[in-house]
Image 1 (cartoon, rainbow, N blue to C red):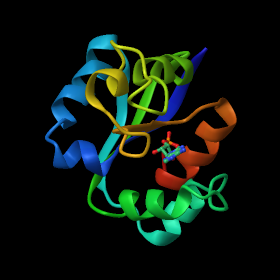
Image 2 (image 1 turned 180 degrees about the vertical axis):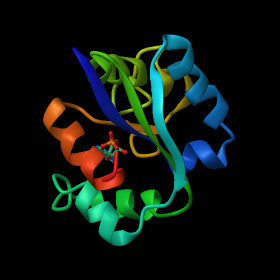
Image 3 (image 1 turned 90 degrees about the vertical axis):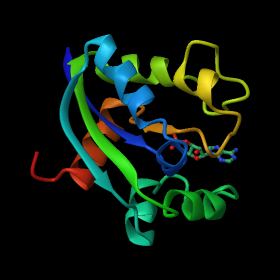
Image 4 (image 1 turned 60 degrees about the vertical axis):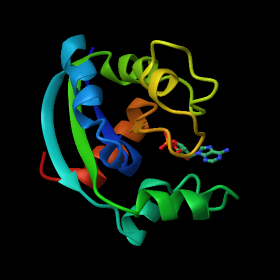
Length: 135
Ligand code: CMP
């Protein structure tokens, strides 16, 4: 089915000059860019976006990182895009992510892992409403 996924190209990617590289991979795959904005996450948006993680030990440094600078928020569309993008970004920990994935090729961190993408149709619906309520 044609789906939409909410993707965040995180502040580490912006700082490292990897926006072009990362967005290029999504373009080359054939996914549609339905929205794309340079945004920033404030504390309140972080708590809402990561509602499932706010109680976890890794959350305070994650929040610090995600609010540390601009990020690019994207809406990607395509056939089974949620699963396709998750496969393209690889495992959470860049040290363990498979070569050929964005994190596997470009990240050495479990936190500064360059990209977030919706992990299910339910999280995509929630995250799209949060980031792009008018879409
Ligand atoms: P993301 O896909 O944005 O979803 C939650 C984020 O929390 C994850 O990517 C990482 O940036 C971060 N994260 C998840 N697990 C850990 C962990 N064990 N230690 C540090 N950061 C983590």
